[in-house]
Each structure stands twice: as C-alpha cells, then as structure tokens.
Amino acid sequence: MTVQSLKIAVIGGGSSYTPELIEGILLRQDLLPVREICLTDIEAGKEKLEVITALTQRMVAKAKADIVVSQTLDRRQAIQGADFVMTQFRVGGLKARQRDEAIPLKYDRVGQETTGAGGFAKALRTIPVVLDICRDIEELAPNAWMLNFTNPAGLVTEAIHKYSKVKTIGLCNVPVSMQMMASEMLDCEPSALQMKYAGLNHLVWVTSAYLNGKEVTKELLGKVGDGANFSMKNIFEEPWDPDFLNALGVIPCPYHRYYYQTEAMLAEEKLSFMEKGSRATQVMETEAALFELYKQASLDSKPKELEERGGAYYSDASLNLVDAIYNNRNDIHVVNVANAGVISALPDDAVIECSAVIGNSGATPIAVDPLPHFVESLITRVKSYEMLTVEAAVHGDKEKALLALATHPLVGDIQIAKSLLNDLLEQNKDYLPQFVSLQGTLD
Ligand code: G6P
Image (cartoon, rainbow, N blue to C red; front, side, top):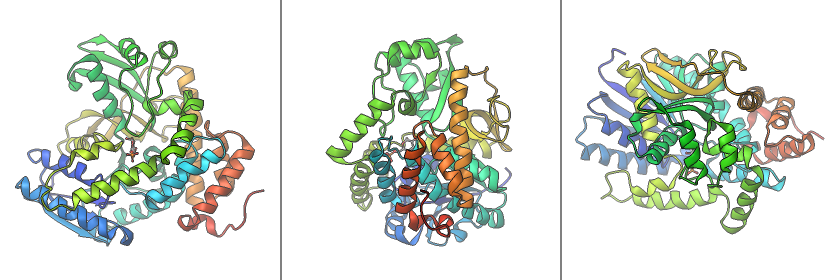
C-alpha cells in the first residue's frame, strides 16, 4: 500500500468491543499512519455510538495521537475513502442472540451464538446486511480491505467471497487465544511457539506445534488433558478426556467441545439457562456495566472489565493484520481465506481458517500435512452446512435452509430440523426480509 495516511471505518462502531480495537490502533502508531477513525452504527445504536466515540476521543487524546475520530449514522459516509473497513456488528442485537441460544434448547439441541442452530439463525440475519455493505464498499472504496469479525465469521466470509468483489479477510480471536494459552502452558514467549492451523472458524485444529525446533504437539495435548486452561470466557470448560486427546493427535479448539462432548455441553447449557439465563443474558449485564464505565469522563483507556467478554486478543488479531497488509510484512497469521488446496477434501474456493502469509496482496494460505480422515470428514460436513446456509440466506430458500440444518452435526434429525427451522424463521421474521414473501411453515 502506498497511501501515507489511513482511514479506518468501523461498522458496528457502537459495540462494547470498540475500545479493544482502538487500543490496538494506538499501540501501533509507529507502524501505521492512521489519521482517521470513523465509527458508524444504526439508529438503534446511536446512544452507544455516542458513548464509544467520546471514549475513543479521550483515548486518542491521552495517547497524543494525530487521529481524527468521527461518528456517523450514514454508513456510506464512513466507507467513503476508507482504507480498511472493520465489520463487527450484530443484527438484532443481544436480544436476537438470546433467542438464538434459547430456541435450540427447546429441541434438545445446543444453543450457541455461532455453532449449530443458533449460529445458523445469526447467519440468516447477517449475510444480507453484510452483502449490502459490500455493495457500498465496491462503489465507494473499491481498494479498501474489509476485515470481517462479524459472526459467524467463517460463514459470513464465505458469503462475501462468493457474492462480492470486495477484498476481504475473515478473522477470529480463537487462534491467537490458543497460541497465548499454549505458550502459558509451556512457559515460553508466544512468538517462540510455531503452531500450524487448519479447519473452519470455530472448528479449527492445530495440526502441529513446535518450540525451538522441537515438536510439542503431544506435550500440549497432555497438558490440555491434565486440565490446563484452554477455553474462551464464553465457553464452559468441560474437561477433555486425556485418552481421547491422545488418540486425536491434533489439538482441537475450545469450540470442538460442542461436537465431541455434546451431551455434557448441552446439560450445562440447560442448567445455566435455568439458573442465570443464556450467555447473551450474562453478556447484557456485563455490557450494561461496561457502558456505565465508558460514560465516565475520567475513563481514557480500555477498562479491565472488558476481559469478561469472550473477545480476548481481538485487537491483536485485527491490527496485526492491518500492519501485515499495510507494511507488506509477509508474516504469518491465522485467517479465514479461500482454501486453495490446503484441505484437499474441500473446493478451492471454500473459505477455511488456516495459517497464511499476509502481505499487501492479501492472504496466501500455507499448506499443511494431509489431515486425518476423521478430521476432514467433520470439516467437510460442517462446510456443506455452511455452503447451504449461504444459499439459504442469500436467496431466502427454505428448502436449502432445511437441508443446511439437517446437515449440521449438532442438529441432524430431519423432524427436529423442520420444527427448529419454522421456529427460528418465525421468531426472526423482522430480520429476515428475504424469507418474508414465502409465507407459511414447512409441514
Ligand atoms: C469468542 C469468539 C467470538 C465471540 C466471543 C463471544 O471469543 O471467538 O467469535 O464473539 O467469544 O464472547 P461473548 O463475551 O460475547 O460471549
């Protein structure tokens, strides 16, 4: 990139996570000539946007950074002339997430924000909005990079790749968090540990880990099996069975618990739902407290309380990527990008999550050794679900939606898939205009 000053547009700027992003920008002032940060949100998020903009201005002033911070409800104005567009929004807000997590439980299925039927509903709401944003970027900032953090991040990135020309990379904080937790286990610097990743977003595996030239994959599996911290704030840390981990031979991500320990995770979700509501309910409380803090004129940095959320290291994941692209670093990050042969069982254009070399022309995925068949078969099945979900979301296609749900390993049964789908469509109808013309339920 040759531009001397950068404009960053943040869509969903009113998110409680924004201070995390701003901290990342301010820590990299020597590396990135960011001169403008434009935060944008929708009318319903106006109040939060104002609070976040004021806090951002205080953070920028404290850092004595030469950055203009602006806010607008006009998304096109934010995108106009942007070099990087960060997307981090939630269609329907936390209330919609609450429904995504609660509805599947009625059918004895995992209720999770991004995984299974909950993530499916979120994808149906989100994909049309993301593609609208892409149309704006194609028109107003065709050279901009879109870094998508909006969940379900892999699925949303798949839709962007398939249905737009925008230069995009999807990202998630899980791989970087795994790196940090693994380096804690081995008591080493995170940068000393080389881990190769392959899989899908929230279904990613570390295929090998090396420390100072020595393979430590088995050692790490042993430590995870012994109960070392290896989860995210939003995922119940159901202990892993050491024999199972040993048999796997590759390191699963925290979200794999939903696939391999389904009964225990479901039981915990149900109990926790009865006692304190789903994760969305807890996040609502954390968020209300966070915004009370954010409003205080004396606050001029990211408060520690934000660590209660699951998005740890979000700022590193996203700003290291901006740095790698802008400064053409050609260093390695874990991103969501077109497969290009890395996972042989998937089409070349399917979006996967893997280690990739990042420079000013984007992400080049790094080949991994062939994955064991039991890994590949799970990935292939979930990718089929994702591809069907993208088609259902874009075309408002109920049959594809049914097939998608029935294909997902955490839903499966066709009658359950049908009832669940009808319920999800009905309860999300305000956010699913693409399905509105098709009245009635599938019987
Ligand atoms: C994890 C995931 C993110 C997700 C977050 C939820 O870190 O990687 O994709 O958004 O957790 O955290 P929350 O605090 O909202 O439950």
